[in-house]
Image (cartoon, one colour):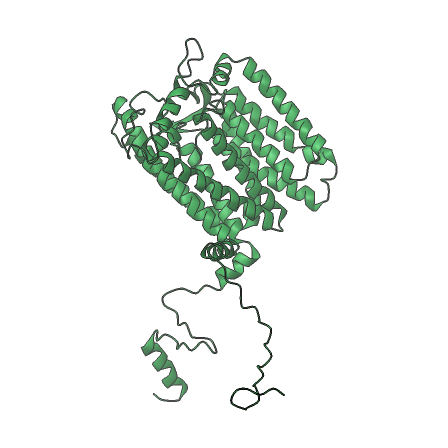
Length: 453
């Protein structure tokens, strides 16, 4: 054995152990994504998205109605806050409807389907009675309630179609009748055509498009075959083509898609072009709340159908993207509620409400952007109009009730304890002492149990 310089045998090094891979380190972006995904999958995510999104849209809508309607009110020799006060009253009443609807059981919602449908059909037929129905902007779809208050029954027809259609399809699914095309179409399609006929008698094609979208949404959720779905779609497109072709006003609106400057003739595109001007002048963060120029008589219907344009002018791209994000969150939450439930009625009703709000928002915003013809429908929860706000907030209450009714959401809500007035004892191994609530009452009960007086 060779020796070292000191005369001692060399020390052999110990064998190296294979390196054990440590825990994988994630980047801050990956950790943030994991936390966001975990929070996104929580049972109450849909509940919070629906409640928070709808409240934020309504509150922001109130602010923009006040800003966009001041000039119009002053031009009509009315107080500057006239339209805002009416919208605030409608929002308060709608909040009550939302709360009531969110606390109602599903069975009661199903029981209200036929009464709401009958009431909506009666009011929509009453609109056509001379002396009762009123014409606004060329559409005979209003009933005067006295003074400055009016009601548009066709807005309640959307809610009626959602509840009645969901209850009808759910009952047929329970009896396993949806495999036959006649049970899928009858009486859903004829009933929808009855509502569409009453609406078109007044000339309101925008609302008719929303009802058609709700019908297609219900058929799609019911699993209609492709050829049946395409057949109904072809009939609807043919009827729509005839209605547009026979109306010079609708043809003029169709000709204004993509217009960037006013034209001469019947299709002057004044409203569409000035909506684009308002959005273009807003920039990134807008000109400031209340500083819109287009609302000073240049942009018609600034506080109703084109309130999104005023929002873009005053709050800029940041404000419009915020509104779009809120509607996207609301739509996602509705789809999530419809996809996670086992109750057929809840699935169809949640899908119908989500289709209604999403389709109406897309049609309104698309018209303001110049991508779609101006249909004359308000932006849900945002534009001025109590007749549109009340049934929409009741529909939001439906979604909240369905989100609370999920098994996981019910369990999460049941685990909650009131923050005040109850004693929260620490569990075994938690190392927490119970909070000392109601000390005198606790001492008295201990004294009685030990036999002391």
